[in-house]
Length: 79
Image (cartoon, rainbow, N blue to C red):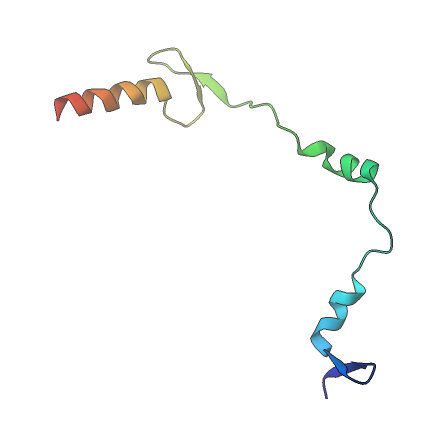
């Protein structure tokens, strides 16, 4: 009950049947794989601005890494 008999010695669970049906009929060619992956490349960042304090480039709504490094260094020397 709840199993599919293949031959006489092996029983396949009923819940495994859909996974066996999902096998591809043919191998995906190199060209098809590359066409599918063509839009996975790096995208240009559009949210890059200048830091108002030091003028270095930083991401919008993020701390400037240069200013953060200076503050971190100052706090280490003060402590």
